[in-house]
Every structure is written in C-alpha cells, then in structure tokens.
Length: 468
Image (tube, rainbow, N blue to C red):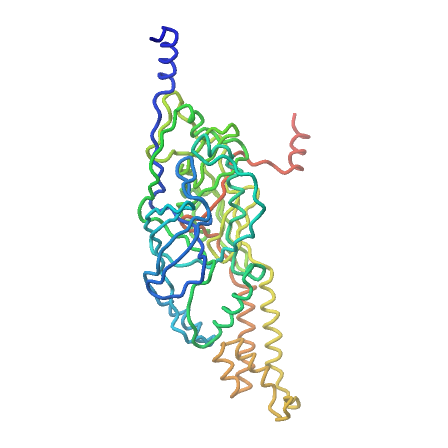
C-alpha cells in the first residue's frame, strides 16, 4: 500500500500531465508522393510502372516511409498531345502519333518488404529528371526513428538539409549527369520520322493520394508535447508544401496563402514543436507581374498563424499559443514554370532566365546572313553552279522547320525571307518578349524560415552607429 506522500505525487503527476494522447499515423488524402522512375517506361496501356520515393513520408512526429521506398503501378490511360504540340512535332519532322501516359500507383513497398496498398490520382510525368547521386561512404547508424524520442534526435534543420541534396534537376542539367549513352540513344531515336514512345528513366512524378495512407496509431505522453505549437526558434527552416496555387500574373496583395508542413520540427532539446501536417496561414504582401524585355515577375508572401493538424490538441497544462511573433517568410522554392526561381533575403521570389538565351538570336543572325548570301558567283563544291543551297536550307529551317527547308530548295528568295523571319522571331522570343511569371502550383515544395529578417552586416553597423 502506497503512503500518502506517494499518493499525492501520483495524483499531482496525473493531474498535471493527464493521460497519453492517441495520434493516428496517417498520410492524408491529397498529399503528393514525390517519386522518380527507376527504368524506362514504354507508353503502352497497362504497362507496369516502377518508381522510388525521392523524399520520405512523415506522419505527425515520425518517418513512416523512408526515401528510396518502392512504388508499383501501371499506365491506365494514353492521351493524345495537344494539336499545337502535334503540329510543332510534324514541322520538326516527327510524324509519330504522340501520347501522354497517365500513371496510377497502387502499392508502396517499404525497405523491409512490407507492402502497403495505396491509391493515387492519375498523373503524367513532369518535365524534370531526378539524377541519383553516387552513394557516399556509410556512416555510423543512429538509433532507429521511434517517434518523439527517436525522431527528435535530429533537428528540423538537419532533416531539411538532408533533403535539399535530393532535389530534382532540370532536363538541361542532364548533360553533366550519368547515363550519357542512354540519353544519346534516346535523342537520336526521337529524331526519326516514326519512333517508339517511352517515358525516360528518372522522370519525376508527383502523384497525389486519392485516399488516406494508414500506418496505425501511437500514444504520446503530454510531457513530450509541452512545446507543441510554440514559437519556433529564430532562423529555423521548415519543409512544407503550398496548398494555395500562386501566380504573379493573377495574385493580389492580401490574398490568403496556406501551406502544410511535410516534416516535423523539433527544438534543440528534442521536444516536438510542429508536427507534420501543421497548417501555416498568411497572405501575399507584394506582387509584380512580368514585363517586356524578359523582366520576370516577383512575388512575396509570409505566414502569421499556426494551426495543429485535425485531431491533435494541446495538453491541458499548456496555455493557448499566440500567433507567430515574427512572420515566417519564404527561404527557397521549386519553380512551377520554365523560369528559375531565386529567393532573396527578404523572401521575395523572382523569376529569372539564363543569359544563354542570347545565343539563339546570335545564331539566328548568322543563319539569316548565310541564307541571304545568294551571290551567283559562289558555287557549290561540286561545281554545279547552284548558289547557296546550304544557306537557304538553313534559312528555311530557321523560319519554318522541315517544311521551310524543303520549300527553300525551290526558291532562294523564300529561303532568304524565312531566314529573316526566323531571326525576327528569335529576337522577339529571347529579347523583347515578356519575362516569365513566378508560379507556384498546388503542392509546390517550399522552405519557410521563421524569425525576423536580419539586415545585412553593413546595415547593422549603420543602425548601431546611429542608435542613441
């Protein structure tokens, strides 16, 4: 029989901390699975699909599916490409009936072999390729992730930095990546008038779950949640996905913005601050549309409020949390358009384009000048006396693709006109036209930084010097 002091202590602990809170470990409907194909996928109906997770899946405070887990699915539909894409392919000499493959995933296979049924919305591949980095030397394994006490052995900063190295690379970066021989064969085959169709190895997919993915439930003691929904430390970065699509062309100042955390955030003392699924809400604070001469759009937004996931409540002994003291701002993002996004120190996302676009007008000028060189005194190497066949062929192709090159054989004047037409079009597209807009699609991946913006070192010294 317990003595009175022990009875009092037990009553105090029970009354202070309460009973454990039961949490469902669920990846909700609509959550995207960021995956890449592990092998080339022929575009045939019911063709099996094999892919792997690029980033791990989290549920509340723990990892439920690590990066590298396998996904199995199949092609469920083949849709013809748009008429514009079809016409462009024909003008380029490709007469293949082009299709887009709609893929659906049905099974998640964890590293231990456990199979988890799932259902995703039909989706097509993205215009980006994931390049698998070479494996690094194995490091000493830490204790397996077992929730608040296990997952918390890494801070949120560590978790995010581990994922930044697994981000996707654009198609333009493939020239420096592996599988050069395979890519060269793909390039040559695609130049044939008729060719087989496939989805390239490494192609990115972001299929959304059409039903929740269940991993059971867990019980968490209230003492482990004493920092839940508290103010994150300054300079803390979290990994999230936007659930509000944004575009600098249509966005308005004051428009509501919401995001969901895709990874939990822990304090340096390993206490959980924000679980996976926590909702951040804020508003657009600045927007500029793209302008002529390739001046890209700009967009800025921040977050002021945190809401816990549905079904998660604060322990009774924890007071209601205030709103975020200092607005959380954008720290990094993946682009949803052709432009590259750059995020400055104030959280402004700017659409930028490569300076290499100026090479296209320079090349077009060279081709146009060659097409216009129809001096009758110049002869081909064969001595036939036919003037400037190569020049007008290039000029016709520059202006109107394969059809232009064929028509230019009948008329040097047509080849010359098409050369100038192609030059004008290239100058317009690469120099005069409007820049790209800042675009964030639904589920766009973003990094969000908490804490007030720190002024540059020079500005800090000036403020200190002028301070009373």
